[in-house]
Structure formats: structure tokens, C-alpha cells
Amino acid sequence: MLRTCAFHLYDWACEHPDVQEQTKEVRSGVVPKGYPTVWRAPGRRVLPPGTAPFSPRVAQAIATRKEQLRRMLNDRTLTNFPRKEAKDVLKFWKIQL
Image 1 (cartoon, rainbow, N blue to C red):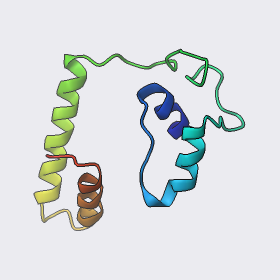
Image 2: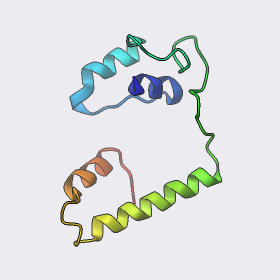
Image 3: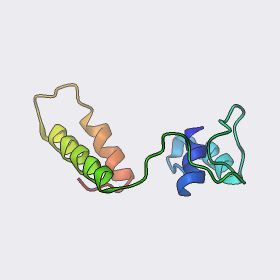
Image 4: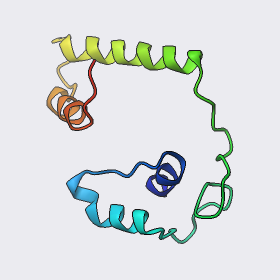
């Protein structure tokens, strides 16, 4: 349901190989059973409740979180931190820290 909402809000669909079939459905306009009626969908141009606009405050929160993630990736005392998986995700989405 979140993938469907993201597609209709941002024209974005997950490209990960594990969800290729779901992505095809989302792009075709299929709306899942139980999809909230207050979320954006074909013919429904609304913002989901609680959606915040992009602002300088949001941009700063993103920058702060990226810095935290950068530190976590470099902190060798975090023995259970999934470094490889985190790096793989960042590489897949072409996110520079």
C-alpha cells in the first residue's frame, strides 16, 4: 500500500528486483484491496493525513540523519550494525553520504 501511495504522490516506484511484480501492478494503476480512501490514488489528488511539506526544517533533518548514518557506517564499535546491507541500499539508490 505504501508503494502505491508513493507512486501516486511522487511518481516513484521501487525498482528492486524482489518486488518487480508489485511494481508492475502499481504502475498499471492497480489499487490494493483495503487501500485507504484518504490517500492519493488514480483520480484522487489528496495528500495523506499528516503529510508534511518539504521545508528547510525537513532538509536539515535529512542532512542530520545522513550524518548520523555516515558516523554509524564508520563506527567499528557497532558490531551488530548491518554495514554491508546499508551500503548496498545506499549504492542501489545512488545516495551519497
